[in-house]
Figure (tube, rainbow, N blue to C red):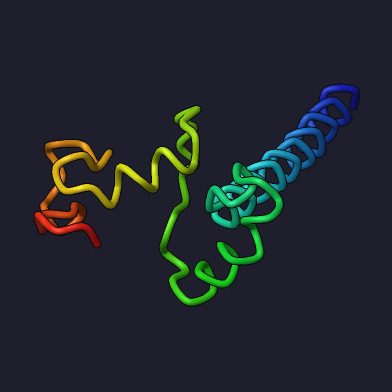
Length: 101
């Protein structure tokens, strides 16, 4: 009789463990699918990124911290040949027009 009781205990424990694992897996998968990187941006950016995310739900956002001064970046992005886009990126990302925008 004790063997049967122990067997039932093990079965009940296995079922409980299965449900706990299922809850953990579901919670992690739901959390990761909802995460699109917006939480890594300053609060002031988030409403705009959330709007973009609604329009383009597959987009993932990645914050890139450069420690560069904003005005320096803008000035150089608008200067022909001085933009900060990596060289291996398509010219569509760069100012390739010799005159200032």
